Image (cartoon, rainbow, N blue to C red; front, side, top):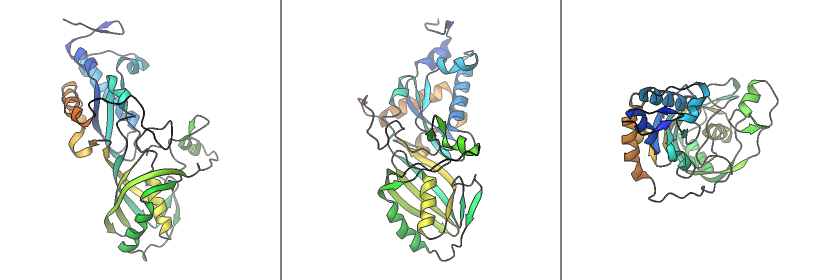
Amino acid sequence: MAAREAGGVVLGKSAEKLFSLSGLFAVYKPKGPTSAGVLNLLKEKLLAEAGVQTNGNKRNQVLKIGHGGTLDSAAAGVLVVGIGKGTKMLRTMLAGSKYTAIGLLGKATDTLDATGKVTEEKPYDQITKGDLENVLQKFTGDIMQVPPLYSALKKDGERLSTLMKRGEAVEAKPARPVRVYSLSLQQFQPPLFTLDVECGGGFYVRSLVSDIGKELSTCATMQELTRTKQGPFTLEEHALYEDKWTIDEIARSLEHCTSLLPDEPSHKKLKTEHPGETAVSCEDK
């Protein structure tokens, strides 16, 4: 017997279970779609499994769900999702992220990654592994960073990336304080180098790779980016792939992930360097 209604529609057993879900879990975002696109696909799959009919934009009101911070469409990795009351926990539980980034020496692009147009080429043969390792020390700790022009940051209510694509003149945002907890070189096979980065909120890995290139008297652009950890959620242990985006699998994941969160979550937002932004790194454009 159905005991609940949503939007005037009596819920079946699967739908009732879906709408009772609450908390945080993680999914795998592949390269290609935006973070919002992944979230919409997740909603559609869950509502379809529950047999809930939606009419256009009303689907966002039917199922309360959100993600804990944008990840660039060209990047892959863990994306934390809040469902039900869990949406209120997204900004307080996810301080800090870890990434694996592959950089390319000798080329610069307008987007600072492989999706952009090449704007500069410089020699890199003189750079050694030791040179690169020494430079990384300058980008560890509390540093200043200029966000990329192609980014989700806004000017007059519009994303900088949208303005750039329209050919409008956009001034770079001023340098701002960001925090790098750890930064290490995992592999060096010129022109490619692989970094492991753990950082705080408002940090752009694309800008880091570009700045490293400049510090080495050449240029560099990011080729690949994978978020391996977001808050306490790791890609290896917690991220659900699309074939497990089911009501039962998510219910199990919510139960499993409860141990990752404080017993009494604080309702106060974490203090970040940039008020109004999510507490995780933003790599969306």
